[in-house]
Length: 374
Image 1 (cartoon, one colour):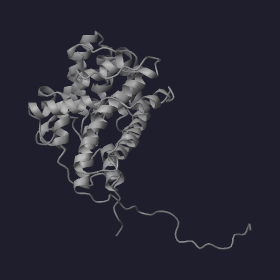
Image 2 (cartoon, one colour):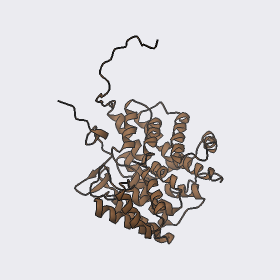
Image 3 (cartoon, helix red, strand yellow):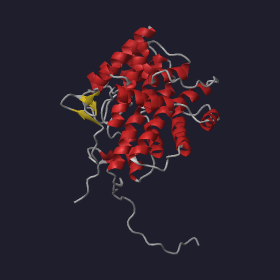
Image 4 (cartoon, one colour):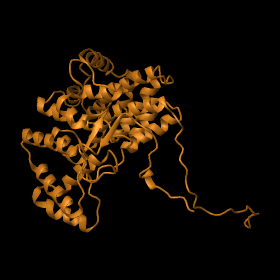
């Protein structure tokens, strides 16, 4: 009897988690039992970050303390600022994020301490510092002066400020906050599983998050939001959309931003993000990408019965906010650090080395003989 091979670990349950679940009964992604769309409506990202890391929503005192610690840890070392200044200007920001977190691990006094308390402190430091590192590179590569973080600003406001030197209107900040909430966590996706696999060898949290960032970079995972924007830029205008998508399907091209390993009848995060995409488009007085979005989505559902995932509305939303396309996935990173950290700590709490088997399909046993060319 031959062993059944599950490519991509499809359908394999490898562990338990309390962090998140797509609950079919309510057709929703949930964090610690709370529906993500409800969290978007009633909470700020900081509250959701606290929830993911600490298992419950914070009371006012807990939130105040959490925000204080995050704000106090935003600043980078002089060394890391210098490293960012000397990075090649053409570096992909995801590689900058990966390198920055790795350097943070070199500088952190608790790198080798993987106790629950130390991991929580390190998780918060990585969470607070990574946006600063990315924003510094955002400025440096354009020949602009680095803008240091401001403690009086919220997490979302501060990122806008460090990138652009100003905070946009509250509706734009809210849309950004919503995107961070929707990107914060998603069970055993490939980058989270990467982080847990690295952790299972009892490696440190900086190493696990560095590996997760490398995994997230790929276009089949986090990089999809960038690919969506590249696709929309190819289409250029709504009048071209129908012909473009029909040709893409005819030529069996991959249409980015559609389909999902978990969701079969639509990503539960999409309606919320689509709503805020529309709000941002209205504020920016630019409906071009909204119109392209609707045409492509309609054809994909009608002809292929494939629904969009959250990357589809998020890409053009970030574009309208003014971010460079290659910065879309790094924004994903600054949010998902919360989910990765929660899973890393969960892995540590009940650890077993992750070591799957492979079915060998190479040569049968061969003997080494004296070679005829000697």
